[in-house]
Amino acid sequence: MTQQLDSFFGALADPTRRAVIERLASGPATVTELHAPHAMALPTFMRHLGVLEKTGLVRSIKKGRVRTCHIEAAPLIAAQGWLAWQRHLWETRLDQLDQLARHLDESTPQ
Amino acid sequence: MTQQLDSFFGALADPTRRAVIERLASGPATVTELHAPHAMALPTFMRHLGVLEKTGLVRSIKKGRVRTCHIEAAPLIAAQGWLAWQRHLWETRLDQLDQLARHLDESTPQ
Image (tube, rainbow over all chains, first blue to last red):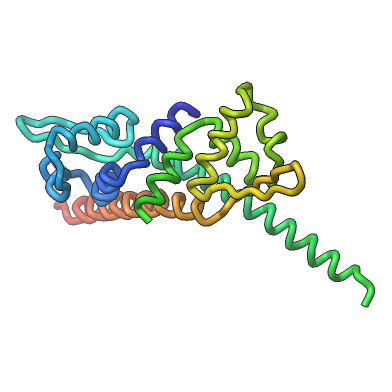
């Protein structure tokens, strides 16, 4: 899992690759459609797509001459789950500090 | 924001740096405490800490000879927010497909 998180977060550390994920979150798309908004050569774009496929964030199917890509939910959920857990720990600690502060406040003689 | 997401996700694409975040999510810690569980030279560890500080995920304060680190919530929340949004889009689309399938099912003559 830790190696997977390395590659998931690494894959997301690039604006082109995040744009592909943003597009695919709304539904499958062909490589041509995915490439269209990006001002870069197709081979460069394909390398980004390759990174996403290698990490398992994106899968593709070729039918005739058209390759269609779709998102894979599991890695996205895993990466978000890790971040959500850290946030939960951190917020729980803030709550505890808050309660402690209130408790000290109440027990201080006026 | 997009450059910040690049650096947040890039910083999280490493097990040592994620371990530091996991530790700090439960409360502040000194550099010595953070370094202790990691079998690596202090200068190497300090480079990882430097990456986390540069992206704003971690802040540190030096008091005398002791440097204490704490987590910064905003980048964690931003990174998690981006992932949560993609997941939301993707799940909304699945729900819509599900409704469409049910609708087609109901309107098909038996």
